[in-house]
Amino acid sequence: MHRSPTRGAPDRARPGPAPRPLRRVTSLPGLTLLWRAALAAGLLCAIGLLPWLSRTDPALTVLKARSAERDPTPEVLDAVRDQLGLGAGPLHLLGRWLGGLLRGDAGDSWISGSAVLPGVVQAMGVSLLLMAVAMAVAGVTAAAVCARTLRRGARRTPGAPRAGGAAAMLAALPEFLTASVLATVVGVQLGWLPALGWYGPRWLVLPALALGLPAGALLGRMLDDALPGAFAEPWATAAAARGLPGHRIARQAVRRCLPGLLPNLGLFVVGLTGGSVAVEQIFDIPGLGRLTLEAAIAQDLPVLQAGTLAMLLLAAVAGGLARGTARLLIGPVLRDGALQSLHRPAPPAGRTLPLVYGALLLGAIGAGLTRDPLTLDPAARLRAPSWAHPFGTDALGRDILARIGHGALTTLALALAVSAAALLLGVLLGLVPKVSGAAVDTVNAVPPVLAGLLVAGAAGSGPVTPALAVAAVAWAPLAAHASALLLQERATTHLAATRALGAGPLHLLRRELLPAVVPPVARHALLRLPAVALALASLGFLGLGAQPPSPEWGLLLAENLPYAERAPWAVFAPAAVLALLGALAVSAAGGIRGRRRRSGTAGTYGPVGAAGATGATGTAGTAKPAGTDIFVRAAPEETR
Image (cartoon, rainbow, N blue to C red; front, top):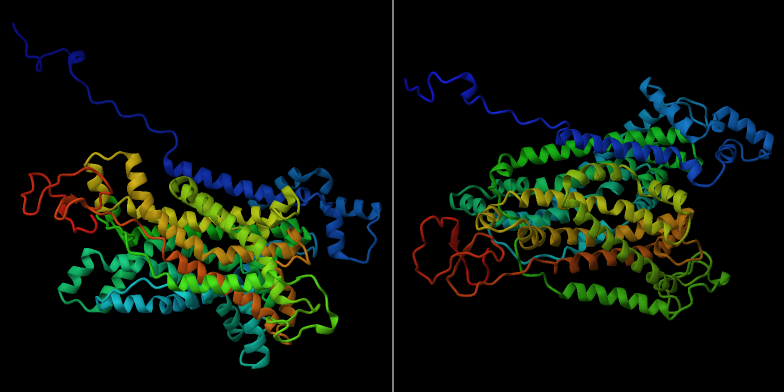
């Protein structure tokens, strides 16, 4: 009897259930956590070895910090080593410290002998409070910077791109200079607010302004750069056509742009908490950044390690919250590919302001190069600007204009080189966010000054040390910006259309992703150029690079800062040059725009946003073939 192949067949002939795929041993989130833990452990080990990397005797440094008048005899140094356990070597100290953390004990300070953990927790609370108020100031400043674009977008009257010179100058002002001016003018001369100490809410105002104004100007410029693309999206046009109020459209436009800025906002949170060393020093604030820097200089290893660990934890929390909030704001469109590109090809901004700023900057530098920056004239100390000395003289009688001109050769060249390297590294790492995300959080937790100490410990002090230290941390905000833009660009409709037309990964990267990501990140890098120049010079002033009488611009500010009340021109002249550099950088960045792609024939059809992908074309009025709903009518000027 014939048997049905499905009924009565032996069990071995029946097709069994499909085998389950083998589970991966480690999931991608698990790999990410392992990568973050490895980076944090590597940083803590490097800090733990800092006293030995610096090629100095830790016992000698601790003895000088405890009692500078005591002679460092071999017997005294041996006693210090026995007390601190330095004889067992750095690895033993590092293991003992990590073991203590598991018990909730961060050890005792090598300098004061007190417990480390209560002091670090108290300093962390002070820095977090200062950061919160500074972020409020930054939010108000960013809103003022974007007010014109929001008003014009809400009224559906877009204008030409602005150069943003005032915001650029504000963002280019160094925090320690803003803090010094506020402390001197508002706190001392006018007496409106207290300038020193940490005793109540009134003591918060000036340091919060010094931190929040430059940060808000930078965030405002980044938001202002993305808002025109949001107002040009179809949803904004449809909302205006339905009669929605302009303020609601503007609010939704800000929400649309925020996900691309939130990673950098997380970086600002960490930077304002642990990186505000200069402001905490000027206003005598017992914050975490100041505590960590003093511990690094004194080689107080337990305090240094605990402070760095606190900043690493803050960076991890802030980065995670920023990324999670960004995904919540965008919603399911990341999965469905329903976004529009915010950074579309656009005409460049006007070229008049960059020429004006460039002419002023080159004029000042050229005039200074004709003078001698090292000539001392004790009889002409701190003289006001005159025909003989257009920018005045410093405390040693040297011509400030000459020092600005000669200092530009090294300051600007090094800053440009570091900014270019940071831009290249930031874009490359931003394209692989799974790898760079943990590295960004870890690197951002290290203030530039501490990075300079680590680099100097490994490579020694010299003219290249500041460049290596600043380059090691300058790429992090650019990589965060690039990865945030890439995340949104991959979820755009034009990218899905181009992929559906058969475009490969290389084509998408070269013709779609990079043209959308690189221009805004390059503008961001130019906006940070003055800050890079200041970071280089400040590290040199700390003894990690060029030394006096080098005419670096940061050294000019630091040298003349004690005389700001008596001779304000000695500080304002280099500050004005730095502000001019910031205005030049931002106005020149307005010319970095995506290419305007033109179609071959008026009335041709092209894919939505497909940058050069092959599509069906035809003359005006030609019927579209079936299945080509992804094609739209393209304007003669551009195909997007």
